[in-house]
Length: 104
Image 1 (cartoon, rainbow, N blue to C red):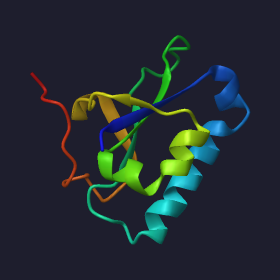
Image 2 (tube, helix red, strand yellow):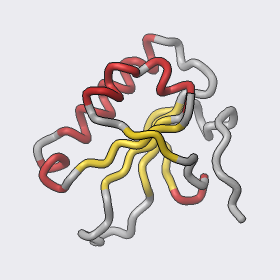
Image 3 (cartoon, helix red, strand yellow):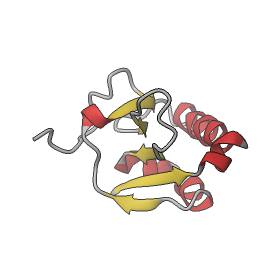
Image 4 (cartoon, rainbow, N blue to C red):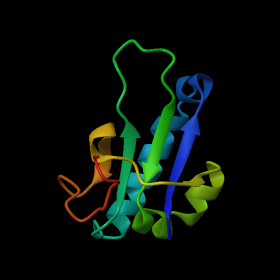
């Protein structure tokens, strides 16, 4: 299973869709016992940068436990992000068991 990404608009975020996405995914994470390799990440942005996209990345194992959620939010297959370009929203501490794109 590949990495997947959900992109939300400012309007989506303002209406609570980002919070709902994270909560629903967090619930799945807990239901699956914090399964290794499961992670949800958000693109790092500069505070106040209103032009920044609202992008949420899901590791391959995360996609397998959240198939319906991926469909509901119209997730698309994507390349893995660089670890330095995202922050963890839901994962094991430090996400040590998740492979990201090379930093070079």
